[in-house]
Image 1 (cartoon, rainbow, N blue to C red):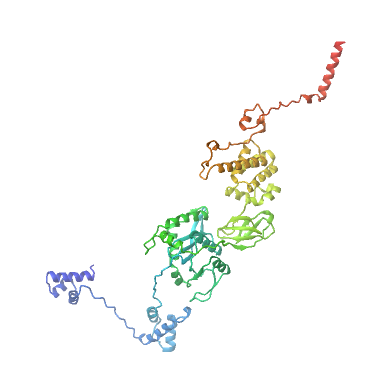
Image 2 (cartoon, rainbow, N blue to C red):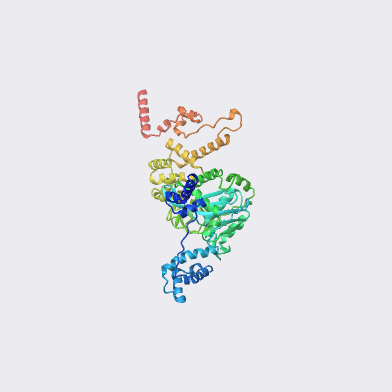
Length: 567
């Protein structure tokens, strides 16, 4: 089916080529002669006329309805006229008994939109803005789903975007609370190297705003900790209008949340921890520097290079983003924070501790001393235990170690290795269950003063000769640690031997545990092990044989026989 434009073109072509009459053209194309005349006058078909439908029953009341709709322009949103209310007023005030509800409804639906447009209420006009380098930034949160250690988890992505260059920082946290809000700011400030000099745009999120005093202006009652944070870093917050209108005031970061989620977090990333995901995000952010935003001639990285020097300086001291809490330690050496449990050293049972709750972890203080640091648990009702916190108690209750939750957690995390299990089994076989477990606990206490690899090497060396003793493990662990430090001192960062005389470029000899039975001069292994030469005579018990009663009696009988023979 041809369009009217094509029909007019065919009529004009036939009239020009064959010089047909209007009647012949109308007959050939099957149209009215009036249509042929229109085609000969203009190649553009005239617009179709929209029929004007009359409503004789409603016409007398249209002015009254229009007046009601215009009064709604200044009325509160929840106190504006509906079609039902307009019909009720027409019946009460104008005796409009002949007007039906459907007639009023259809007229109000069209006429309300026309009146709003006349008043400029439904016209969306976006005015392009120019952002000076280093002056402004925008912040927003977005929900993302991440598969963490095989579990699908809802997380919160903090996004900070410089308005001039479009350079953005993204961090994923298990919570969207104030601790994540502040920690995201600090990470963004330190990564970008400065603070905007004018302001940062925000929604009216509860981490910063406690009350919106008036919807049409920017007055807000702010959170005290947020006020302290803004004062510490020296910037002013700018709060957008509530609702969809406010989203347009920071459209850059709104679009950034969706773009990053679609391009980097789809499909759902599978990671072992959020720290691993955030490390991936840092790599993606560096790659995004080569991206060019629509409407700009230069890349994000080039614009950021020019903007970086325009940012305000960072303060000397770093702000602590953690939420300060003071829980009490229960009888299990655990504290409860946001319905999750975390272990602390057992000697703090019954006392209150200070907790700095942060987005991804929490730090526990006893006074000013840090006594524990734990990753933050994302699932409600979870717990985190550290075997080291219970070692002093287990020293006196060794039977509680095999079935303890702390031991199971240490095995799951990899801190309690198969080497520890092998030492424990060998120690119990030699020393018994109780004393063997105590030896293991003494070995575990070595982790407080020596690196894990040194302790593991000490355990392996002790097991080689069957010396299942904590003292032997300690000696060999310290020897391994000292040898490692010596090699690190001789070699550079890349593993190459540092500048020194070629004769000195010899690594220290590898030492191993040597059994005391190898200390004999007749054992060649003693020389190999580097033990000193033993020149002492072999031990003998001949002198002690004189003390034996049977030996003494035999010697007397022999002397009597010799006397008799001589006589």
